[in-house]
Length: 321
Image 1 (tube, helix red, strand yellow):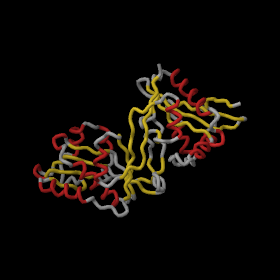
Image 2 (cartoon, rainbow, N blue to C red; image 1 turned 90 degrees about the horizontal axis):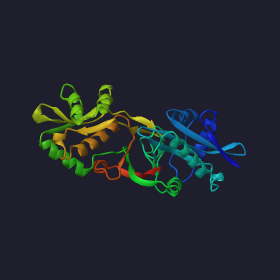
Image 3 (cartoon, helix red, strand yellow; image 1 turned 90 degrees about the vertical axis):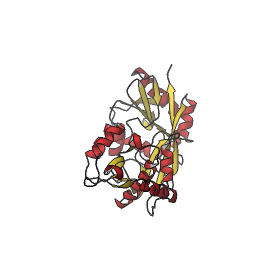
Image 4 (cartoon, rainbow, N blue to C red; image 1 turned 135 degrees about the vertical axis):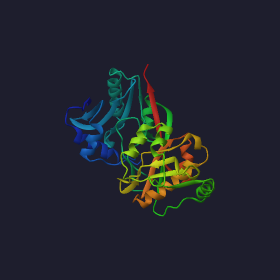
């Protein structure tokens, strides 16, 4: 007889970590295995609801979700050990979790990157990783389960990958850079002796988070586009560059990218991103990985730099009546 209980205060995280890692061995699962400490850090805080399923007193699966703002909840994970599947356990876990979220005030449940649980995954065909799975892997058993339980896709995310081992700016992007340079624009690392307007560019873009991310780490490089016709005025930025270990390699990381509204539509972001990839390589990064919405124009920027799609993630939603 299978039973489901709350795992919040039962000291079961080590057992649940084992389940998570065993499920990660499945061919349609990209999640990176987690140690107990990392598992607890991801699943053990915030307005989180976690339920475990037992068979003969042994944990065989679990589901976890969180409560967000404005009556929105998030489904973080549901998994059952392979030998216990096809017995209705995942469905029972999902039903129990949804009931708890609804009792807490949730009017809908989403699978999306706004969730507090960022699940790291491994890029197919590599040992390199990305720190956040921004949805449910399209075509996976998990997606099939959720669709069968009333979830539908409202958006999708495309993950991109770029190997920096022998990276060079693609020819078409290099040609675009040449044209912009002829118009008086320059690309390079920020230097207070050469550039002005770093503080102001964030206000023009209207993103205080990016402003804090760059200005709080002046030791980290930031790549900028400046207008030589205006004494080196910064008109676009991407940074701050901070390579970090993800999976088996070093990933090029940065906090944000933006262009002055008066300079948009000229291909500046396309060139700036490609330039940034080159600087990431110089800073020790071995690859780039990132994601964006399937219908977002940012895809053209990444593809122009040489990034290739690595995975598609479904953002699924269930609205409660």
